[in-house]
Length: 336
Image (cartoon, rainbow, N blue to C red; front, side, top):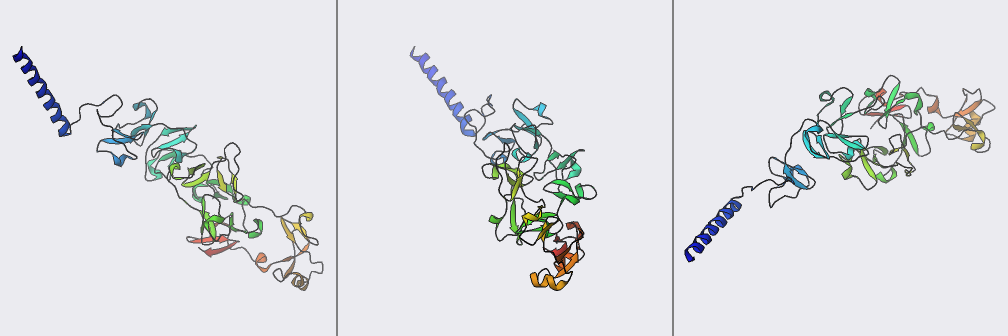
């Protein structure tokens, strides 16, 4: 009896030593059903936190599962950039991981890219290096639009529906590259998605995913924009666009629609309050306002006071008329 017990103890000791040797050597024991190695599932934030052959999924390092389509992946997963990752709900492409885009409120797997040529018809390479579908009026530059159109807030707009001169914009704004643009001294003067650059509010790319935006914002074409879905209000210098995000305002805004909108003695012509000059003499305008020294017949047939610059032939209609590094401001080309 004593001999048998001794043999059993010896066998148990050897088994324990063998298991300890396996554990100490760092060899994996087996892969569990949850995708983690027995006794270890390393925490992570991004794929680079994991060992070779692993990817970061739901905060844990798991085996890298390559795929061609989402059919190659498990339940609740999508094929994004050739790897199976958890599927997500979304509002815009920036809510999805690189290698996926947003369609019908769900992230759909796609391919990564470095240029449009790597994407199939109807797709282009977005700011996340991902092939995404685009609509017929979507744009990133005037080159994506048709004749007599410009690209404004990622939509092709008829040039005639945009501003050309400062007088077509609200007070404190100028017309720059067909957009009514806020004159600023700091970023705080601009709507979300814009930054104060060279004394003007300009679009500023500041995100690669919605995770880097503030609460209530999403990463839309590389800009953090406020979500106005469901009627949420936008800032005073922004408007709720057709994509239900608050885009910086650009529309031309007539100051007046009738004479009663103007001060006494002035008339409303083409959205601007004007001073009549019944004598048709420049001296009458000079006596009223030295900044409007010219008395000329308007298209309405009235004689009105004009600024000298208003009667000068505009140098440009769009930014493309001015060339690289220059903007069209109030009909004149200016260096940035």
